[in-house]
Length: 193
Image (spheres, helix red, strand yellow):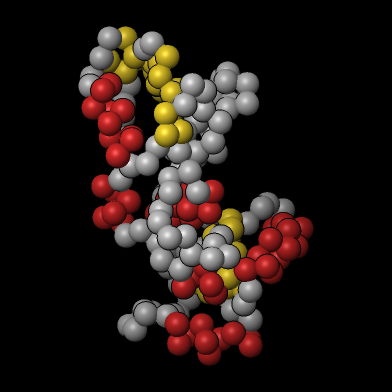
């Protein structure tokens, strides 16, 4: 399915003019409803109001107040935007996405760029830990003794903790030699499962 777009009447013409040429703007049943508000400051309050009607929290596609000069992996806005993009592309996209016109006008990494910046690991796979650590550093992750926020990683013996920028919780990757024995999320505050 496609994406339906709900735009306040006062913003319809500027919104339509801001869309890429050739984009099909007709609503397609079965896709997410995209609610576009004129100002960044309207998004959170509208999402809370919408919660009372939907019975669930809508997905928010956030915007930066000012564009960052570079993409930093621990930027919470970048992480939230990446998470929404992943949700949209998933088998179970969100029902409603609330955003602002400025958020839609701000750049997002291309699918190819996101794919090249993603590394999939599986239980049973053998990895070169040093190479994986270099890969993380090359993508802007910071090595810490204990991770607390997205964009950080820590190594303790055969355990690698990684906090992806688009994740709610960090991941603990337990190794037996070079083989991945388990991968699970954990609570960053308690450092436990």
